[in-house]
Amino acid sequence: MNLLIDFIPFQTQGGYGGAASFAKAVYDELFATRDADVQVFAAYDATLPTEGRFDCHQLANQWGIRLVDISTMPLAEVISSNSVDTFFIAIGQFYAKYDLRDIKCKVIMFIHDIFDVERCDNRIDLMLSDKFNESSLQYAKRLFNLWSGRWQRQQRKRYEHVMQLFSAANTIPYTVSEYSRSALEYYFPQCANKIRICYSPLKSQEPAVPIEHPKLAQLVQSGKPYLLMLAANRIYKNPSLVVKVFSKLQEEYPDLHLLTLKYGKSTSPRHIDVDYLNDADLEHAYKHAYALVFGSFFEGFGYPPIEAARHGTPTVASNVTSIPEILGDAGIYFSPFYPADLYRALKLVLADRDTYAMKSRQRYEQICKRQRSDLEKLIQAIIL
Image: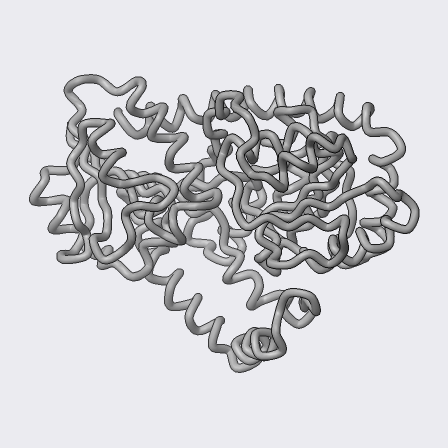
């Protein structure tokens, strides 16, 4: 059997975020269990960076596979010339710019979410701004792209191209949550009743090593309680609401701190912002946090709450899209549109962290069981 797998997630945006973590977790399991008669090729794009969080050449050497450049010829030709039986696409959205015509082999393809389609429909950008971390020009550009219909035209073209393969007879389509499946079926009814669900597997936990980042080390050593927010440079993660409510909480909780990743600035002496945490330091950040604040307006799956739950760290989370499905009764939920509701939710966890920590640990065990089962089924679908 000849298998072509997808390395593009390791090249897009430096290989950071949930896309790369998902692909790496799937491939770790695949190469731990594959038979000797399965020959594997990896699709990559030589015009994109290859040395981000995961180095494509190092991974290829580690797993004993050959990289195949898909930037120079149609995918159908790549598949034919290498006698590929199955093509696994970890993140279908990343293939919008490639020629997907005439692919005849078995395809297993994931589309994790369609937020770019949904935000044009619900016009959420009209309600989002961040006075601390977004310039007037950036805000105006977002509004122009929405009002002019530019985003909608771009996404319609992008997804119509990708969905032709996603809904093809030779494709087994996957997504990562019930919510994402419902959204795909709502906007692309040609996929109805075909889409399978595989909960995103967690990447392997990093070994315990001393904290490397000096700001994180100082915060942890101080013993001060802190709230943790990740990806705070992305406006759709709702950083402005978190920062705003934290400024109010500072008046009532003099020891409370806020640790943000990539917000770009600190808004007070007790707001600590860091631009990078390696995987081991991120585990430390989860472990020592009083709570994770996950105020996202949208998630196809959402890794951070489960990664936090691995350490018994509670999550105060927005009550939209897939988040309640994944967190279950372990979440302390709030509306991402209302500062007072986040204030209420944070005060709940500040008053009784132990109860929510216990629920987080229980939910982690439940979700891990589902993730393991789904991953085993996915690997079987890939190699059979």
